Length: 597
Ligand code: GTP
Image (cartoon, rainbow, N blue to C red; front, side, top):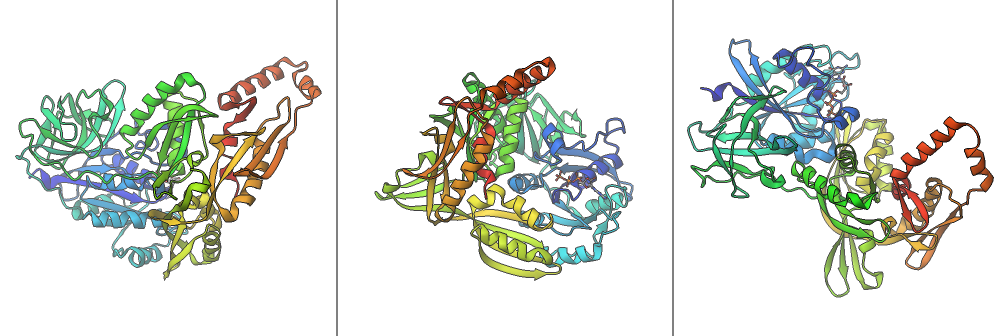
């Protein structure tokens, strides 16, 4: 039957293990694009993804593969992101698949994130097929890595295909393995429609476009459908697949994955995880959908120009359509005016959202220092969730402060174990478990989330020459000794610069912070005093000395092109500055706290 010739799969791979290169090879083997169209890494379509070389959004490609048995199979490949911040998207993509390829760099070995994603796949009932990539590299050690896959994940990898996405070695064997081992989809082709929305995004011309997986029945252009969550009816305007070009087919049947356009103009008209049914059979059950993920990092985002507030709101609305993890609510700051408090999965997620807002929506934004969310028990017995340090109640009214704790799974080669343990201790980590598996050590630590989400990942990488890997998740809130550190600029408390820190490090960090800010705040026509304070007690102080007049005179003297350059520089700099009282503070100074250990 038709279903027997469909295979839906994802690729689980750690960043840089070669997922994009391998998927490009699949497209090439199956003739999805001509050479001219075959841009480098076609799946990573967003500019930012291409520049940073990482995959952020899940996307799909439908390919026809003529197998060695003479039959042609429809392969639906759902892309997944590889970074630790985006693991929630992995489970979303996996829910549309019956199988997953676990791609492991044969020269690097297994990474913590892949382990976590494999477990998710196995829990969701998927067939996981290991593949050893980068066999062209001289340092590839497939036997060792196969053993590691077995030791750490528990998958037999002795028969795993050994390939090179770069040279093209054994790529067809990978596809053969897929066809042979991934089960075909199940479902009732003749039953009433039931389809899952895996992803939705806003297209300025088409309105909302959704990536869907048909579980039962079929969906055709011209059909009348109902969204289970909103109860609204829509006419299907377009149905098709990505080859990877958007290609209209007019119909998607049970087991298939593709796009649907339904003249849905309101942004939240087709939410991710929603179920699409036919208006003829509106009582068909909703599918389980997706677990809602909680943001771990919060920051205030403020438009540099107050006029941009409404377009900022609109942009956030559109971005949140295909990013259920993005949280935002209006916020006002004495220092920065009106903006939004936004919640993110991690620092990378925050950077990417800020970049997308600036590039795709042409906004200039100031971001305040990120923070985690704290649980505060007041003397009166109320429990408050505080996602903004400046909103912390008066210390005299607080009974107990609790910080979020992350359970961290780290894989590290033995020679870097000492460094990594030292780092975990410095970050207030508590060891839960340690196991030697082949040449890597599996560590389990509980570390305050506030320490993990900031620079822990980068520090871990530098402590292990890039070899350690990390996966983490929230476990619980735990009582801790925490204090708010305020920053005063020329005697004025700046709410947007407040941070919450552990008592043991607050003074040291306060001193380091004022030093750092002194470097970052440009000299002005007058002295600028920067103070760090806990309550009314100033714990550190620095001064940005005033510019001397003759310095300015010299800068502006003579040479026209130099003068122009200087003015241009000032103009560019202005974009990301905010006037606090009579002092101009650049974006970098708002994030200075990230740069003190
Ligand atoms: P993300 O999109 O960030 O998750 O990365 P990815 O897993 O998609 O990795 P990508 O395909 O971008 O490959 C990462 C790097 O490894 C690139 O520089 C590739 O050229 C290289 N690479 C991929 N496959 C191979 C291979 O088989 N051999 C060698 N030598 N290099 C490879």
